[in-house]
Length: 100
Image (cartoon, rainbow, N blue to C red; front, side, top):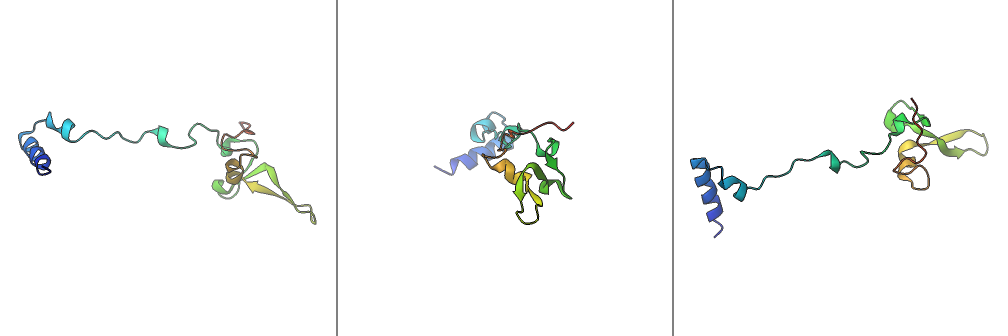
């Protein structure tokens, strides 16, 4: 009897019966901040080791990188990649030092 639910809903709507709606249409919970990943971890941009680039999302970490064996120039790793790697700083920011 699939036709009964729309019919009852229409009757409830016409008669403005508020009692019907919670039963037929359960309330949907809105999104909360608890669904956002990494909300409680320190930010690289606030870290003493963060090297700002033209764009903050391309910033680098002064702890990790690679030295060119010919020229000696050090290329620092992107902060985002360092945070994704468990053997480096990792998602929790284990080498984080507040910069201010």
